[in-house]
Length: 275
Ligand SMILES: *[C@@H]1O[C@H](CO)[C@@H](O)[C@H](O)[C@H]1NC(C)=O
Ligand SMILES: *[C@@H]1O[C@H](CO)[C@@H](O)[C@H](O)[C@H]1NC(C)=O
Image (tube, rainbow, N blue to C red; front, side, top):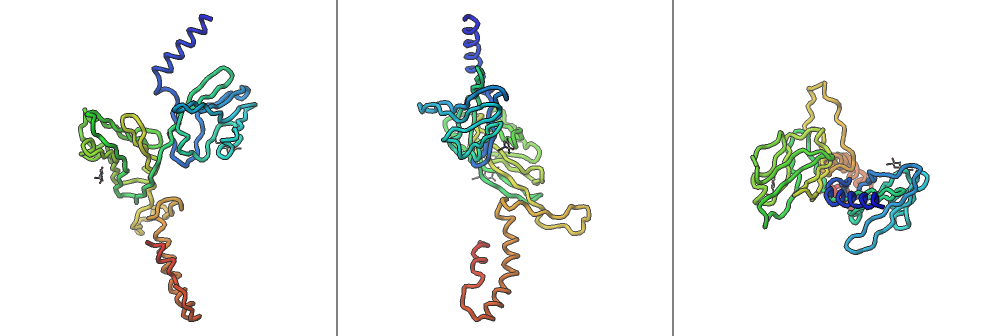
């Protein structure tokens, strides 16, 4: 009994003091994410989403013989699997989840973050937007993470104003609440998911795509062939394809139209889509 009390006491202290130590998942809205904790294969267990603002806790899934089975509410987004995969993340997934495996309790904090998409050509500069109202407080800190790794950190009370390599903040970042990250001379490696943390709270994410150089240098034979970016990248990279399509199809369309002496609004859809 005494041991149990001690255990409860210690876990209480631990839980109280180590808010930052429970596993965190930062996920972009609409992406899939996997819970980083799991029950052992032979353990029976349940996953609960803990209460939020007085709403009762909700059972998410049950674990048996190495397989998670979602409850009715989650059936559409969680499949039967050996780990819990939410697909896709919705905004209300933000919260604290608790795995109850045997008599183990493991908490995981999930935060779903809105993101914007940016596209930049290799070699160009790009600014990743993050804003926050900085009134009413004197001390501000900002941290940018790329794919989970810190790339820039700045505190207002010890700001040197120096850029970190190709990364910088606006000189007025505190007074204007402009926490945007400027990245100079973008490289292919810079591509990824950037998360902006203000006072240690994630505010927004930016998914950056770096496309091939705009002006292809034909003289360089060592350069690998230009690989067009994936279609889900930004509009900029789709535009040339649309223009090529329009340039090729428009005369053909006009010719056919002229041959058929039809009166349809030829090529109108192409022109509209290039806007
Ligand atoms: C189980 O989840 C993993 C990701 O954690 C995924 O790669 C795999 O396809 C899933 N299996 C099934 C059967 O859905
Ligand atoms: C915020 O700062 C970035 C540079 O870091 C700049 O490019 C951008 O224009 C600024 N935004 C506004 C609204 O001034």
